[in-house]
Image 1: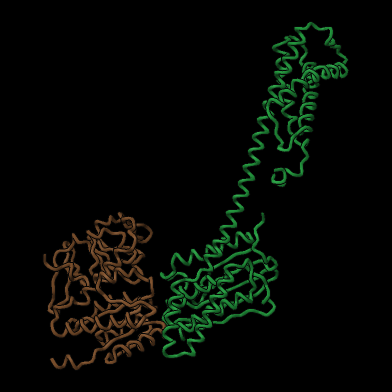
Image 2: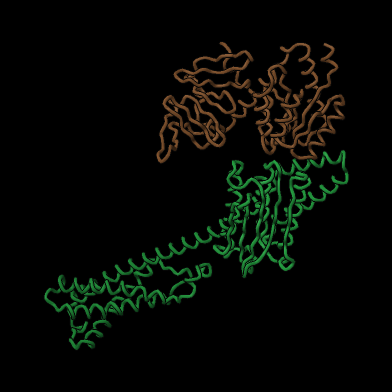
Amino acid sequence: MSEHTTRPIRALIAEDEPILAAALTHALRRLWPELEIVATCVNGVEALQQGLALLPDILFLDIKMPGKTGLEAAEEMAEQWPETRPFPHIVFVTAYDEYALSAFEHAAADYVLKPVNDARLGKTVERLRQRLNAGTVNTQAAPPADDNLARLLTQLQAMTPPAPRLQMIRAAVGNSVRMIPVADVVYFEALDKYINVVCHDGEALIRTSLKELLPQLDPQQFWQIHRGTIVNASAIATAVRDDMGKLSLTLRQHPAQLRVSPLYAHLFRQM
Amino acid sequence: MHSALPATHKKKTRWYQMLYGVRYALVISIIFTIVITYGLDPGSDIKLNFIASMCIGSIIYLLFNGLRLTLLNEQRKHKLWYMIGLMLVVAPLGQVAGLKLFSWLTGVSVDSIASLLPTRIISTLTFTLIGGGGAVLFFANREKIARLEAAAAEEKARAESVARQAMQTQLQLLQAQIEPHMLFNTLANLQGLISFDTDKAQLLLEQLIQYLRATLSSSRADTTTLGQEFALMDAYLGLMAIRMGTRLSYTLQLPDSLRETKVPPMLLQPLVENAIQHGLEPKIEGGHITVEASTDGARLILTVRDDGLGLDHPGQTKGTQLGVSNIRERLQVMHGDAASLSLNAQPQGGVIASLILPLQSTTTSIPS
């Protein structure tokens, strides 16, 4: 127990504008002198690497960054975070209108606005201290941070304007265009600049991103289960947790096994 | 009213339109000939009837329209009763004079009016009057239509000119808008610097003031000089370079000879903003921007070059295309096809935007 109280709290800052990063560091030193800032990253890719390497307790993530946005970095970090360590508390640092702030409120993920003022940052520091203390005494007191993140991502997705529903997928195969009814798709899998459309009777590539595809699908029928996977819910047979605690899906009439990101594990809790 | 008429109408005298009416007078004379030959006086010589109709028709036409147009009022229109009254006077005169002309031309003797039976006089006159009346209605109607058409065309031209002027102003204001996002981020930087580097804070504040002042004056002016536009770009890029640190470097190349050249304001700004927002800010390593002015004969060429992410990466949003189409619309309104904007991928990566403007043309004024 004494190990918990003496171990310093460690934080990572990701901010692409050097002056803003320095200003946040200065403000945190003033308001929370014991906090140890273990890394200051200048883009989303570096934030992901450093986060996974240093495993800090708190992430201050700028949302608009080159490489990856703060949201993307957090999402990928949650998927690759070691199960044995608690996921860090995330504070998003955002310019005034980058994202609808109500989504952050609902998701209970903390956020601070740029320009950051000491009074507001002071409240954030207070909240973080409380959560960290609660976490050391009783892990059930606060919801796991990755649950908050999942909720935030769902909220933000829900805010993208609804696109017209896709009925048929047109996939170029050689010289011809294959027409695939959306209902026949077993799952979609992101591959670099393409999406692999997997059906019972074969696969086809379409040139788009899951981000663009998702709003065109019926959310009741198609579930995102991973950053790179959307599955047809009616094709899922079972959800299995392996020895390492990782969740994966088996499918009806298809041999593939699909990994489920911890972010979306809540979809497969028993009723 | 008169002076408000479109230019093409001003040059013509009021009698000019008599020329146009001649073909209709001819048609009416032919109808008369046919009616007389096959209806009123069967068996008579069609050639003689035609000459007689032409004589009477021409004289009535000349008298009627000549008098009418001479007595024309300011509004260039007459009440219908006025025209009918005129016709009542002109028709008998035309009848008598026309027949005299006819017998003089053809040598065919025509019974003098006095020797005819009163019934015959009345029927002949009535016939001529009916024709004259028809012509009056026809011409009155045609003139009314022409007047309405001219008024509609004038109204349309005026509305178009107003709309064009409004669009021009709106586009210019749009492009002079200071993005709130940019302003807040700059203020955030300023706030940070004040607490730990006051010299740099001072520098940033100076750049911000210079940028705001230049943007405001550009949004109000019709024209500006290349020197001023480049000073604005210097302030903007200076701000961004402080914010982005080592990730942004830039070069401005303006030959001294072009410093005083007049250009429409706010054409360069959106291109430089695009290069930063979509090319360099989202690129991990950042990069370099070059803004350059040069001439090619009578053409002024302004280029904005960057080595950023390029045109086809997913960060190129609808906002970029809107900014570019706004510039194109402004160029079209100001210079027609003499000006253009092209965006191209650079072979070594990044984008080059080229603006071409006619060198002499310096104003944004709209032809009225």
